[in-house]
Length: 273
Ligand code: DGL
Image (cartoon, rainbow, N blue to C red; front, side):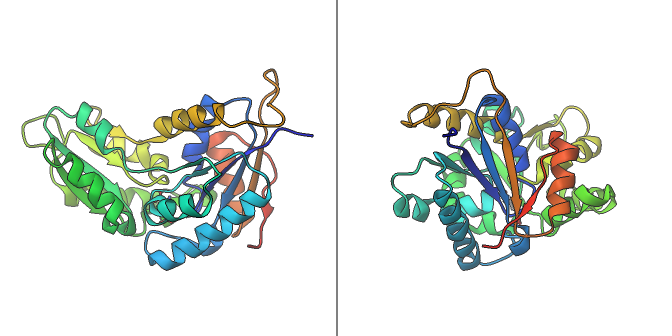
């Protein structure tokens, strides 16, 4: 009998940024990663679509006997985590939300940019988070239509022209970045795809602007929860955890992204769910 894996899913390759943090924090755990790129992007679709897809993927991962499940997508977390928790009370479920609280702690100018999908920014969950921090800083929120999709495509082609143009357009629309009074000194990446554009954002915004995401916090939270799960077989502390990669879309996209950004060479399998 092998040790149970931790399930991780996203609309596409974005969740690999969370998987990277999870593997660093939990190097002996096995992971099953699902990219739902056959039904993406989530961020410009309605909540019913995201909920139906998330339910299908969670049911599949539960059938694979995962011991915990990470929704490595801000959009899916915002739309579904409260319902999925009710539907799977036995399953440790971890979600990801834009890192507003860490950004407040870091910002000196008190002006914070938030890039995310249209759907995340429109969600009740994000509004509640924003309200909870509203007295502590000024937030400039920017829906970034097309950016997750462009990042998805660039993983395979290696052509980052569109990513750079969209990053320039969206950060330009947010106002002035910098460390002077009234400038945005901290940028929250509220979509798990965006860390794969952080080098372009850094080049556009300069070295002083702080770029934050919640990858490490999600990984630490997962570690805490996993330690409390009673499991039949523990992962061998000496062995490196295995990663199984699945996609509902084109295997070559996930294959290229996993290789390019995580150095993973495991063959991606096609999944029909
Ligand atoms: N990676 C997803 C997120 O964190 C969404 C990308 C999309 O499908 O629009 O929000």
